[in-house]
Length: 433
Image (spheres, rainbow, N blue to C red):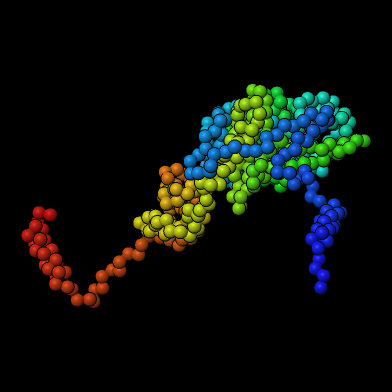
């Protein structure tokens, strides 16, 4: 039998390689924009100015120790409950640049529908800075403007939405401040819908509260995790916009939310991430430097700390006994009325204390299920949460009285002695009593 030559074998391999290349070219290819591990410098409409983005994060190794931060103000919270995991000057009032737009979106979402049509006027179309390039008379939906507002951070979209909802920009700003008052944001005051004017102020703690409220909207959550979006334009190609939040590319589990920068505010960031169902939000304000890489590093370091150092634990279960309470001489059994789940730092898991505080105005009868006080749960000396305390049984009245003595029962020796003593006392002392 003739053995194949090396030359013919090489020819076969080359043929197979060429065929594989051809099939690869003919087959489906991934979108290079989504396949990229770092954000590309996509031009920003309408004039094509490039958006410089960091391409890597520099963070300390995650540990039980909070990371050092370059920014002067920051907070890390549980996105669902608002539990604070870390804070650095969280209540300092600072200019917040385009983070203002998160409150703008919250007010818009609560007062209009995504499908409503907005007619752009001259005020909106004349905005500067980051803009979509809206035109006077253009008709565009609230939904598309929200993408421009939150993904591209477009100032013309902010004004167009403000005028649509509040009729005027000052009218909308008044709505923003009323919303802040309802949410008890004591360190916040808004002066415009975009943050470009630098007149408004807020704090890291207040902005975390705003972000948590905004995440109640599924549309908000969808928008702030979007990397790219095409906003329709009248008689022109769609406006291709790109998210300014590079954590959507660089941080595993990132789900939003917003960046901001002006010279007075410095670099600002609200960042959220979800890992294994644990959802955290970090706010970083006032980071400085020629680029915004520092603020993303701070945000990523905070999220790393939260995911590495904390785990969700059940601190008390519904129905757990917390002790009886005595009401009008009767013992009322008491249990926890709810389950309390909290993120607990891994080195503090065994430092949980539970205390029951009964209400002062308790009166009988008490029915099973009635609230009788509250249960305070602390971890390492800090309050982790409060749940209601409820009665686990019905208690209707005072304890039963002993039955009267039976006259037919023979007296005991002690009773006979006491009767004799009573007769003697009456005989001797009777005249003097």
